[in-house]
Amino acid sequence: MDSSGKMEIGSKIKELRNKKSLTQEELADRCELSKGFISQLENDLTSPSIATLVDILQCLGTDLKEFFTDKKDEQIVFGAADYFEKQDNELHNTVEWIIPNAQKNMMEPIRVTLEKGGSTYPDLPHEGEEFGYVLSGVIYIVLGDRTLKVKKGESFYFRPDSSHYIKAGEKTGAVFLWISTPPNF
Image (cartoon, rainbow, N blue to C red; front, side):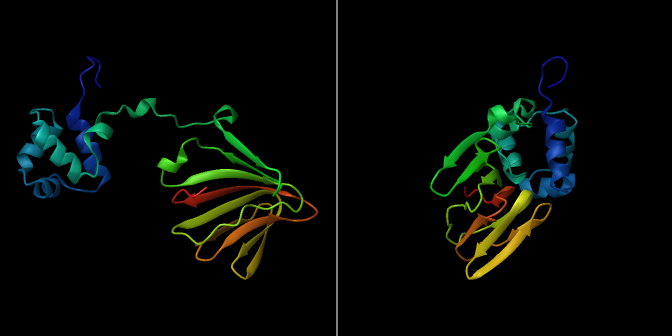
């Protein structure tokens, strides 16, 4: 929006086009429009019909709803008040979802606290990748028939192609960040 409160469609389309590394000509070809029309549109010299705008946005990998959502309202920084926590007394762990509603995102980060000898719930093989960083203590990743030790300050990254879980050292317990893509927790 500019100072008059009018939405600048052109500059937003140009920004999306640049993010996709497309020239005006490439975008025009994809949408079966002329390069001149795209140029006029980006300079706010013309307005597209709704149908044409829908086509252009589709070629840019988005839609009307996302295009007209004001990104400034989207929360980017999260604190303790936003976290959702779940304790498992049987497995002696606490899981904190540190980004709320992350299942709608491409990745889902959690912070896991394991008491001495505690573990996460065993997970079956699934699509995607797992990444983690140990904040304190020592963890053991049990991945199929392998067990891997990860200490404070170390990170891990694996494809979950066999059943897996993480357990803490008997002496230390552990706290670690764990990020799954796609969301899986």
